[in-house]
Each structure stands twice: as C-alpha cells, then as structure tokens.
Length: 190
Image (cartoon, rainbow, N blue to C red):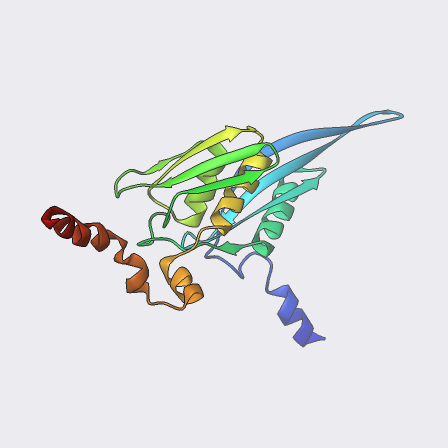
C-alpha cells in the first residue's frame, strides 16, 4: 500500500518542474436550469519544456483554478516532440490545418524573434523556438489555431529523419546547396 502511494502520490505538481505552462484562453460557460443559470469555466493551456516538446489541454470546472489544473494535466499527457534546427527555429516551412483554421509557419534567421499571434505565440514559446514567422489564415478560434499549429509541427521532419527514411546520409540530404554551384561552371563552358 505504501509503495503504491509513493508511485502515485509524488506525481502531483513536483514531478515535472521542467515544464512551463501558458494559459491561452478562459471561457465562462453557463447552463440554464430551473432556478436560473449555473456558471462554469473552460480553460485552454499550452505546456512545454522549451527544448522541443509541447502539448495542449483543455479543462472544465466550476472554478477557474480547477479548470486550469485539469487542462495542465491533460496537456502534460499529450506532449509531442518537434525537431528544431540549431535549437532555435524550424527546419522548413510548414502549413497546418484543423477545421477552418489554417496556419503558415516559416523558418527565420537568427535574431528575428517570434512573429506570431496569440495562441501560436504561446505554442512557440513553450516549444523553445526563438525565431519563426507565422500567420493564421482562417479561423481565429484559439482551439482551432493551436490544433492547426500542432498539426503542422507534427508534419515537420528533420534532415536526420529524412535521411534515415531514405537510407542515405545526412550530408547527402543537405548537399542541395552545393549542387547549383557545381552545375554553373559546366553550363558556362557549354
């Protein structure tokens, strides 16, 4: 019995201190009943370790702190890992979709910062991205924007992953920059 308590009891808030969380939205929702209205709260939270892992969760409760706690717990259960270039930006441009929400994310040179709106900015900050340019096209609903952003981020692939999938070396995948330079002298001679 004591052993089971150690496994479960120690996992409340101190288990993952390396995770940071960001409250994105709180909605007050009401249910009409015979005596009037009952109010509740819905919270949307993004959680990440700022080293390439991020997740989001939503929670509902009668009180705001309880809704935030539920959303944070759900977000920690739904983490995804995203490969980052140099630990600061994306490897390539991405488009993500969810419902009517569509987002476009582009890599950026060092020093650009996070150029993105509300919910997308929260995702990038929790992910640990420092340089990115992003635009939301379509739905402005924060739930759809976050889902579209995470949809795009799950589709990102690193050169290492592409090389492994194609059975090549990473250097062969990244050799693209040298190919046009090698062709131009031959084209100039002809």
